[in-house]
Length: 99
Image (cartoon, rainbow, N blue to C red; front, top):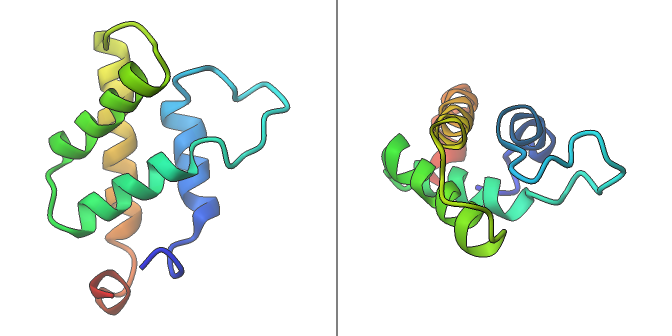
């Protein structure tokens, strides 16, 4: 599946919707969040709910990035990121998702 997903599309979503450590305006490599975004895509294609996939982003934010507990705004960003990734995945042919 990961080979057929446009990673650049996931990156666009991550940088626009999530960006928990505020790197959007920096010279940071665009692949900074790739593993987290691919994990969300994988969870969604495996049947996880939007809430479960968003919780995984919240966990990354809190445990791996050592940021404060999720706020209402950060939770909303996680949910919106997952909703946007799901909308993108829904545009892909079912044969790609099933792989």
